[in-house]
Amino acid sequence: MIKTYIFDVGGVLMEDADSFGSLYKAVTKMAGLTPETMAQIWARHYPKMAIGLEHLEDFFKEVTALSPNKVSVKKLLDCYKKSSVVKAKIITLIKNLRKRGFRLVILSNDTLEGAKIRVDKFKNLFDNLYVSARLSLKKPDPKIFEIIITREKINPQETLFIDDRERNILAAKALGFNTLHVTDKEQLAKDLK
Image (cartoon, rainbow, N blue to C red; front, top):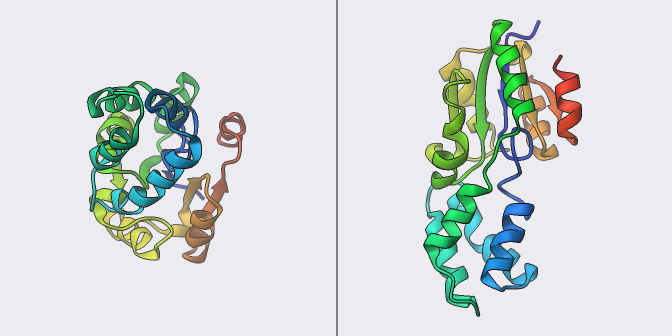
């Protein structure tokens, strides 16, 4: 019987922080860079940002340095903040799970700034929030799951781990978690009713 739900944020509760969705398209357009150039800059910075060794501002500084448009780091950060929107359907889903008495936890690969802007907005809906940059580990590293097991005092066999990345799903399964691989957010609401 499932007692605890562990949710990823990017790609599950909101747009994926690790991909070039609408947020990155907006930043790319604002900066006047090609998607390929933006992807290269992101690839240089994200691995360090995801474990707290670098800040989002470092990424945006490189973007502004290469930008043919005179765009500021502040404008890019503002764009990032405005693009971090949670759909009402997702909030309703989480509230319904809470009413039914389930323990709710977030485990997200995100930057320190992303944690403040994207993840922390869920603090009133979840029992605990775990972010890779704050733990200096990221999924699919088994150690990050072991931290959750220990801190939350949960049994993986009584826990449903929900993520949009197959590699994270496989890592959780290897530790005995029940898993739900999200490929469609609309389907997520149906699967969790």
